[in-house]
Image (cartoon, rainbow, N blue to C red):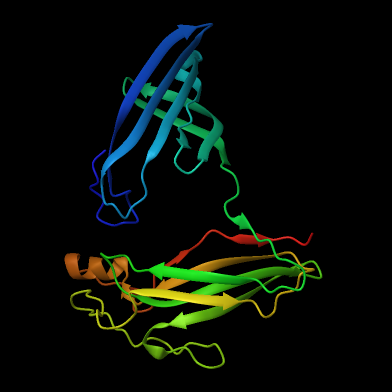
Length: 264
């Protein structure tokens, strides 16, 4: 695998190599097969996660009359590096219309890996504290703000609270609100403002509203300064015009895995 993605969100940034094998046979009126590919990263962006995963595809096909068939060929991914997996289970019904033309319809259920996140251990009468650290993508725009989102159950109802921990350019107010950023996007070139925003945030936060008797969770959210939305690139490149109500800019954001708290 060659890292050709034009964005960090579309690829791993790593060179990958590995082994592949395939086996096909016919038995009991079925076509049976297995395709397995194991990949390892060996070079690429040192800031990106190493890769070690397997793509596994079992193939079962039953040919019926008049070109109809039943098929199951889920593409499974086993991520050894992160102890994760993605296993589709499904069945397809289809028909062959020509030698190289078939159409299928089916239903699929996906079994994913274990629930992400970690459990929070809090001693009696303590308040949980978090060290939060975020760095900008070196190939992208600066950061606008960093937040913690807390959720909890109260009288059987799920509630959420957003806490602004820090904001760029001294925009965090005493009451915890953040004034909107004045970072602009050049609508003629799609260039974002390189003079606004922070390259990183690092802060310690304590939950002063913590209730040890309530199930709750926490996760971090980081917002980027405004950048060009995909339609603005289309307007500049292809000279097309979108309706005025379609936003030309966007504030990209990322989330952490959650931290769960369950009363003992």
